[in-house]
Amino acid sequence: MNILNEDEQTQSAIEIKPKGKMQKVALYAAYISYILAAISGIFLYIKTQELGGTDPITASFLASFFFFIFTGFSLMIMAKANLPSLKFDQPEHKKPK
Image (cartoon, rainbow, N blue to C red; front, side, top):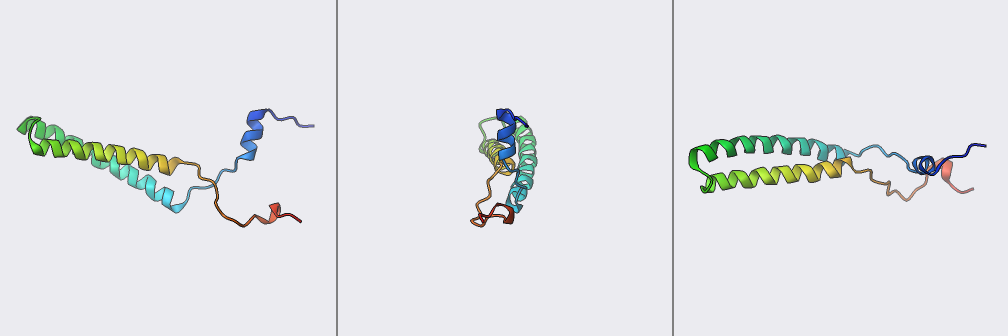
């Protein structure tokens, strides 16, 4: 008789679903967002040295930097989430007889 502990029972009950197309798109968009944040950070540094911290151009680069960082973060969370299957039909091996 095979006795499973609680963690093994929980793991066996959870089905690992492959990532959908939209989650893959969200992952690539998150990477692009992080790249754009890095570019905005570089321009922010350059413009801060040239114009100072109180210039509106510097403020716009700071705003775009924060926007791309937090957009990438939220897209990464959506891409890495383990979403359940929301289909109404049951697989053949689980249908009641």
